[in-house]
Image (cartoon, rainbow, N blue to C red; front, side):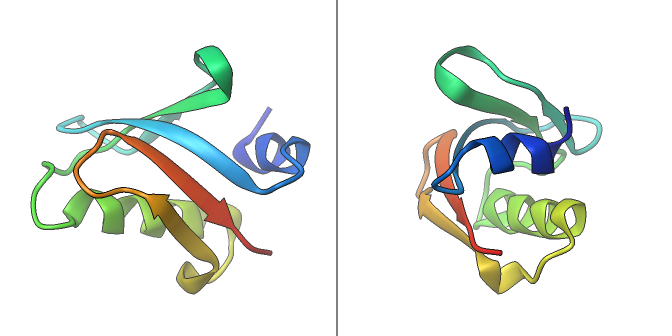
Length: 86
């Protein structure tokens, strides 16, 4: 299953992810418990870099504009909620 298939199965286009910063590369590790995706990211969690990198990665993977991806809950938490508009 790829990321687009996962989002298509979620009728609201809202996904939950858990971010693991300081990884060697950007990578989705699929479903954890309670419909949450684990996302390893190479950036350190400072000055919104992680959030920008998540949006950029999703934009490239899904081939959609960055402004179609909204972080609904993000601030300083590793658990994030994202809405994707197609």
